[in-house]
Length: 321
Image (cartoon, one colour):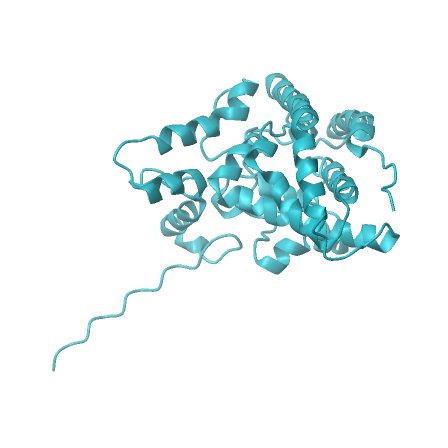
């Protein structure tokens, strides 16, 4: 059966994105919530969004060809039924969780993803601050298992676009916590504020796309604590609104690190694919090290969600008889 003619949801959603940004500003005015727009930052986000659309148009066919080739190896013929669409959506959401988590734990994928986290503001324009190098980094490779399982590439791309459109509205401070059943199952503004925060306890948490259940299952869920407001941006902010620097700065940094003299092959590979913040001389800090440093300096926070337990005290030496 040939694939149905499915719409491009991201293109259809653009007017809705604009309407929601206007609504966000109106809500801020009426509810006196803190909605922090900064003209240069917003413009940079819009340019990043436009560049991401161009990147998808130019390189998206590469990803699609790979998925079509993988689909030739399909284990099952899953067809086009509504239950198949629903199952594809759930499994693609799990795929997104894995990809998103890896994008925070491997510097290679972080280099593409970091641009989305580079704003110190959190509003709906931040949702449009998207990468220009996702395809070059190989993000489409995470779709291959779905194609081999038997989902058609057209279906995979369609349900993925649903996931992407869903995530737009959660980039806001205009909405507080939602009813508990929604917060328990779905990714919400509260959960995603944590994901964008640079507070030590919030680093590398809540990687969900649509369903927060994956973070709860795999131990990466951290609830928003109103006693500790989210501070947005990178651990070390860029200090620029230049879209080209925003898009490419981490790739340049990787190249500089990899070509350093007197490094072993393993060290060069860790600079490219290891945890962001890793350094061979300990001059930088990974997220895990930042969390451990925070607990060392603030022992009363040890064991809070997102922070490690205090280290075990060393055993006293045995006394001689």
